[in-house]
Length: 144
Ligand SMILES: C[C@@H](O)C(=O)SC[C@H](NC(=O)CC[C@H](N)C(=O)O)C(=O)NCC(=O)O
Ligand code: NI
Image: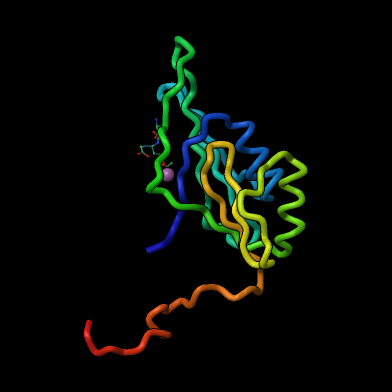
């Protein structure tokens, strides 16, 4: 099986492209307008992981100008990116007007939000990541 993409619905495509592309450095690799369905899909990817894309779905306003309400979707956690310099990345995002919700005090992890309030985790390259096998550090209690 192959991981392809994560789709997020966005309310403002231009603001989202400024955030994900100008801010985080992702590149638009293709887009599709669907006039019948009244939506646009824009696929973004990163240099180091070009196959793991983010699919932005922009539903056009209805003929009467109304737009859908996507609620808060608190079940969705975050999108995580490894960055080469977490301080420089946060300074760049802040210069673009992005709030650094959790500043990188420890030089390891920071959180910001997209224009649609999707939580974005930034992790410093080379910083310790959670163990891939969390059970590796657990005492084997023998009870599974
Ligand atoms: C191209 C492929 O990666 C897709 O995800 S297309 C899936 C399709 N998307 C839409 O119809 C977009 C507009 C729709 N109004 C929406 O907001 O999703 C689709 O089946 N979407 C339904 C879904 O739950 O993703
Ligand atoms: Ni999709």
